[in-house]
Image (cartoon, rainbow, N blue to C red; front, top):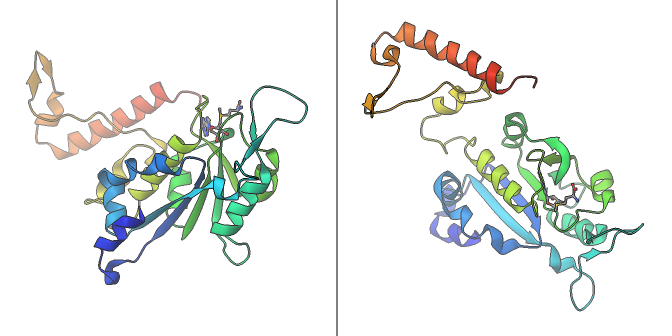
Length: 239
Ligand SMILES: C[S@@+](CC[C@H](N)C(=O)[O-])C[C@H]1O[C@@H](n2cnc3c(N)ncnc32)[C@H](O)[C@@H]1O
């Protein structure tokens, strides 16, 4: 997305957060970063996203970044050395001091509180795995956290990196038009959001709850609160 910078006056280039994404598919990020809130956050200079091609540090003529697992087993594992070198390049430690995250199905499950924390950083580095995964020494020695999008297995970390970019971008000051909408949404105070409706008040006999049409702001606030509690109890039982 560096192309978008050329359209922004230098005086407005006050990036709040840079997210570097180490990946074997840097082109994966071309289109999604142009759209919606993320596209705007980048175009307005709140956010910079830098896909970093892991193959630059690949070995040999074929720029190899993976090898067979020790001990046998199917598939290939991303090697520690190219990832070490890529991380040294984007975030030399010290004094770089970026926060490094490895994406892994076996990591801690990603929540809003991760995003809240990361939106306050200067530089977040996200490492995407592929194939059978990543040499464990990356998790042990090279990153600060290992996170998962949920208890399912994707083919690579790139879709997860996009989720992180979008989740962080909408938290940056000045990106979402009405900051109140962020304060009210799901997972603030540990609750999911109440149901929302808009016009028409009735469609094919499906009516909006009367209380929302009553104009009584006290009753509406009370109803919304009850709905948040009820839905959280039903949908997030045991969490
Ligand atoms: C095919 S997966 C490897 C799955 C691994 N063999 C396992 O059983 O957990 C390849 C890469 O996709 C990414 N990935 C897959 N599922 C993920 C998830 N739920 N959350 C975060 N990253 C995921 C990780 O970076 C992972 O290294």
